Length: 250
Image 1 (cartoon, rainbow, N blue to C red):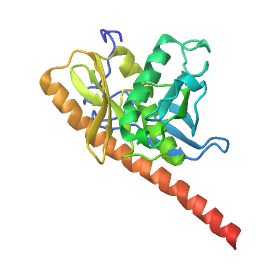
Image 2 (image 1 turned 180 degrees about the horizontal axis):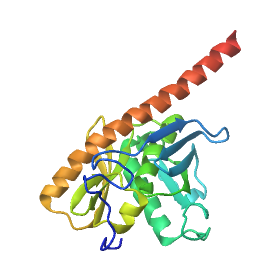
Image 3 (image 1 turned 90 degrees about the vertical axis):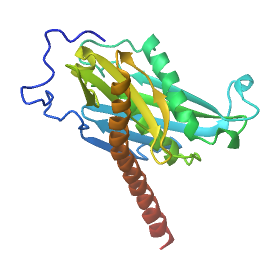
């Protein structure tokens, strides 16, 4: 993350460049069950981010020596497509950042899943960023949780995530790409909203103790809104499935 010297991220009336207030999420839309060939899937649009997730499993582990005797093996692969960024064509080969984010996403999702219910099996989560505009790791977590639920994976709760950043000395919810690039700090946070448990908290930049406490409050408020969109997407998905089954019976 680079310093924001010379780049104005707030207008004179304290609003952000896209017109949002500091505590305002970008428009979010989630769809569940978007891929027929996956056991579970989801699609999210958060601002200009476009991300699709596919889930396969539980199934036999390959290679077999990676199987865990007492719990499920959760594997996540986060990938940005070559045309997902505007600056230049991204190499299709996995980058060090993508490998790190894949690990972060897995660790954020694991606390929500009853891993012990499926020993010696694996669940694979494939995340493809079609278009990127900041906060892709937390948007991926939000969509991946919906895809896992769509696959019928038993979960303690859904997981939703949001980034809290510092721009011109003020905390802001859901960083866009330009805010992430030129802001003074970024704090991705993920939670199980119903249980109130934090599953991810990172920080890039300097935050005071008071700012961390405020960031957690702002994150929870935003995550509860994302949680409602997750539940709406799943309810809509299952309503369609039920209507199709009833139609077949008739």
